[in-house]
Image 1: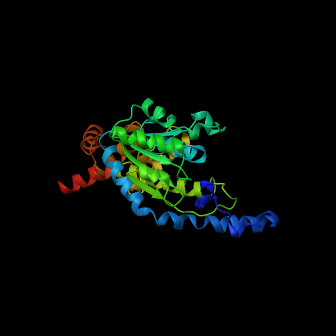
Image 2: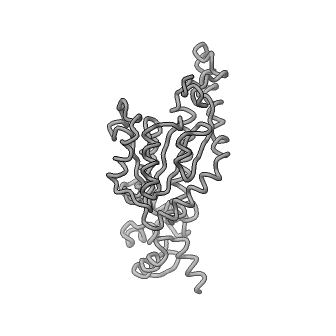
Image 3: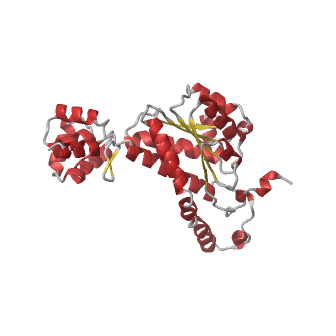
Length: 303
């Protein structure tokens, strides 16, 4: 029996067997109804996601990186999440890394056979000088992609933390992972089109992982992105709004402190909230590894 036919994602969905005869609205309602179950599927694996985040944060705090890798849609989603972290949280582009089987050209055009190589991911990871402080997360909706299995094997040899996100039960990649996340989204609307529900689930979990890590890393104060890089007019306006919301100061003062801080939102917030000068706040933030919340709480405890 063909092994692929046993996978949850490769089954025929009885609710959509006649989707080709539906009118457009009914077709969309059917797709939407299937999508509605994705969040519930993700909810069942939250303990595993939390475990992966906590273990990854330990390594991140030691200077490690988060490295996503996969093939096809899974690989593209990893590259997407990694590429969104620097502009969102002001982190270095090397902190989150996305690898896709076949290289970045595979983002827009499939590279035949790349995902079937057990050695290619090891080569890609070796090129990054993988270390034991890194976290390597393999993405494979089918749970059996050779590229991902090979990469996880290599990462374990190096001593890096390994995680996997798949959308099938008893995924092959789970056996190579310190933390295995199997989010079961079931048969797709179109059989085997895992860019749909499976892709949505992977995207949601990646959002959770990177967002949670950045919160723990001190990139968020309250629920505000305080490490936003104000590189254009829209982001300057957002930075001022964040300073105002975080401190209760006027828009004029927010703009003034953003200018004094040389567009460092966290520094501006610290200056407004503490009444201290730029140099003092820089020192305070440095003592607390750039975490605004810890800085403010430390000051309150000492007064």
